Image 1: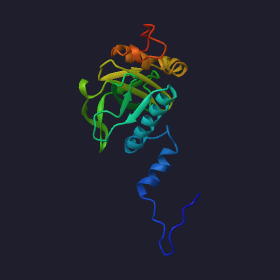
Image 2 (image 1 turned 90 degrees about the horizontal axis):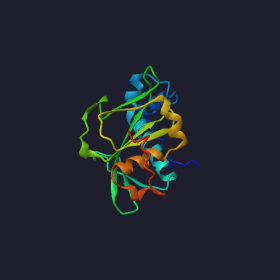
Image 3 (image 1 turned 135 degrees about the horizontal axis):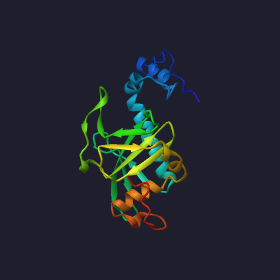
Image 4 (image 1 turned 45 degrees about the vertical axis):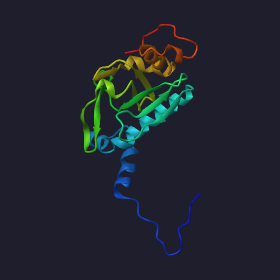
Length: 188
């Protein structure tokens, strides 16, 4: 439904950067590296929304953190405890088809980031591969993490498994529906 403007008030023009974003993002993921960097903020938001969607579908309660926080989401556990989630996304594969995540804070001026995160900045990393619509959760602290191409099908088949492994690694086995069976295959 269209909201009419008041008589005599012209419709404001769409900002140039929004038109450019729409044109560039219409070709996603077949975008230049320059366009991926230029439009990192909306693509990062898309990854956060993918994580939100997955967590809600898994029965979890997740809330966005304030923009200035060093994490993106809060995951509320049934016990009342909360865990801080950092969402990172990758759009391209390396020559073997793997997705490499380097934990650097985003930069307002490009893709390079402001510097590495510290272990106290968040509890769980949510690695989102938008092109595959999959997420792997990890509570292991490494500044460089990889989702192997061979893992994609398993992550798609069992979207909860890596979340449960991360919860178990943090000692929250009581938050795992149906209990924890000890399988840490996707805990990396």
